[in-house]
Length: 165
Image (cartoon, rainbow, N blue to C red; front, side, top):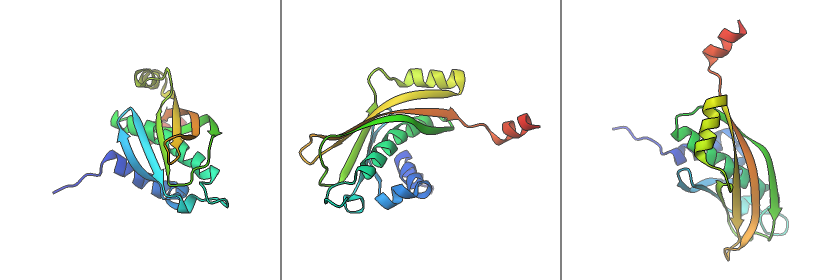
């Protein structure tokens, strides 16, 4: 009997094995609604600052990973093999986070998957803006990020070596 890991389990394993900071932060996939949202979480203890609240760098990292992961999961679901990287981002710290961290990523206003995948098909790369939010214990906005990501199709090794010859 074969057991297959879910896309979110594969994402969490990938994060921990390929991005050492994610393992140190103890990042975990908390929830995923395909092509709608991805929630990553991390405990406060390994992400605490000298004030006893969440370290700003941990918040920025978790939100960046959530935006990246949302796009990565959508690409994998479509069978696309791409490198995804953050092109630019804007981050606002609104209030301290005194408990565990939880970042929810969604597409930005005016963004859609259809346009993104059409760009990818036509040019081998596509761009999407995500919005990521971290809320405090009362549910109020504590931190927000807008981040634009680029997905670029990987060149197969056979194609790369043939074009280099």
